[in-house]
Image (tube, rainbow, N blue to C red; front, side):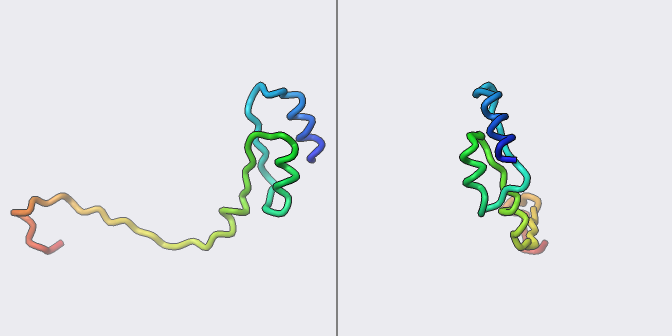
Length: 71
């Protein structure tokens, strides 16, 4: 795979930006970087995150004179 990527970089010759994605992890990212691609996507960074539940509550805007403290 790395040989194919290096060939693509050579054929491209800087005409467009190239990104490599898929099969990249924190252990092999250096090998991909040495191929000469411009961008590298590492899905392992986001796939291993523990999700949290987050909510944002938006309240209507009240004027100070009409707001009585109750929702």
